[in-house]
Length: 468
Image 1 (cartoon, rainbow, N blue to C red):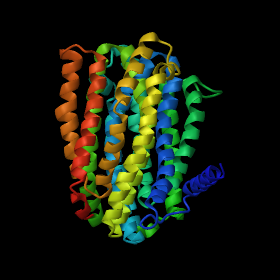
Image 2: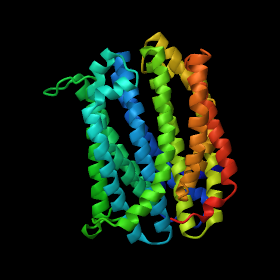
Image 3: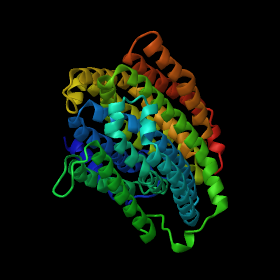
Image 4: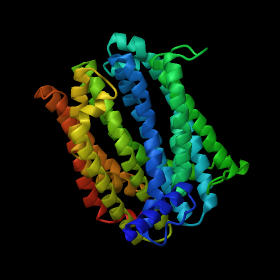
């Protein structure tokens, strides 16, 4: 009993240190401790990112199936924005982590500035398209005319304000690469609290603020994310983290920019492949009506909530790989990956069992419509059946990225998503008439395939020799 009390006390002490961000040395000492110190704030950070989705879904669900479907279709398109943002983020994390491991903080700061320049440039292009063509975008996704008329404002605002998404991901990637995961976590907590307060105000109206309906969710989310970006920039310029940016750093450095683009292209490619696959799956789901699509949309948002902690642990592995390769410790980098994968698998197994038993109860929180609940619960159960494989797959793939080898995951994603998943989903759902379950099964099988191929490739060890 005394031993258990000591263990809990030590664990709580480690948790406080992890949240505070006081420990920033991850290239020596206990690997288990390093994983814990990085994973705790990264898991909380990723959970905070997914809270955006859940909060919007909760408030919007009272507006009906069309409103939920609008959010689902728009988020499917936004996954392409996330693809670019996350792809760039992987390059940023890899290079910043490598420079920190090499004790080159100035080089890390210069990389941070170039990543912000690049993110703004890409976001402007996407904003123009989103502002001018929101109705056409929803139409391409298979939305019915009444849904487009009611929901295009939501699409227009989120795509038009995508710079907040882009910079939020990129600057947090800078913090993660530097080992300042607790800073990234605090930024997203601040952003989410603001979003939770503003969502009902803009959706249903409050005092002088009119009821914007589903469009209000987009306004609230954009304000929440935009405020977080301002907070991030203050942290960078005032030096409240390991990375500090001064006025002398705000210049275009083509050498660093080209290196960043080179490393990031593979990351962008792999996520465009993966997320465009999600877009096409959503297009297939639209064939089965708004209720089925709404159930699938809610399920995906719930799944994302539990995938984000897993993604957080995967990001911890990426940082450990980058910093330890920078410190010329490749074997320590590899050990970090296998241990992180094991802990991630334990977590995901518990989550999959939870969904197995409580799927209907979870979906009922967001909708009372029978068909929405039926297909939402079915989606949760089938997709979560592969969660243990997802756990190892995500850690291994992110470890390649942390090493700067973004090409290998791109090849794996291309084969598993475009060559396997999309044809399988189309044939199963529409040709063989399995219906929506054909899409759910294709998701599970593809993720299992990614894990198996990723582990085999990782064991070859070629990632240890990558230079960034």
